[in-house]
Figure 1 (cartoon, rainbow, N blue to C red):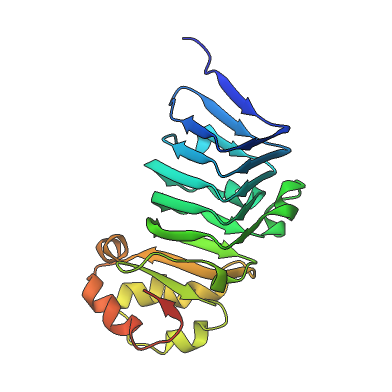
Figure 2 (cartoon, one colour):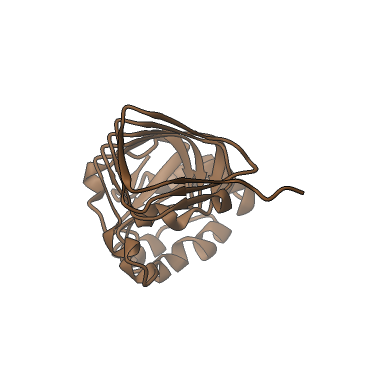
Length: 210
């Protein structure tokens, strides 16, 4: 079996380019010292095949063709004015320096980004101003200030498992978590409820975007 070819893009500035990161047999290394401006990045690989280290994305569009799961390395990137399309689950964005000792985790940031055309589930936004972000609408829903509002939310009459698994655990999110987005159909299926039951409680609070 031939070894997987590595695709390394580093130490340069690219503008108005289209990057197709779609070869499942390749490992894509973006960065360090890489700036992409007004670029379209097409993603169709798993998280383990996409390594992001110290990249600045400015006004870029990410077209996610295959669900991207559990990709924390966005926090090693600076994202400004970017747009996301497609399905992402278990991904983290923003400034979370406690995540690791590597220099790129000290530089992560996110602002003025648009997720309205994405489907997010279990995605967290760290150390940023969520007012600059556009979150996806229902059936996605976003907790704003989940840690600060945790005690208030625990008083809601949530479906049993959702209350115990999600709401009761909000205070254990990393301290820099400012927003948390879920996808109602997936959550409902996993935690034995319905999107309608969830929404009925969500509508009682002002700390959600949906």
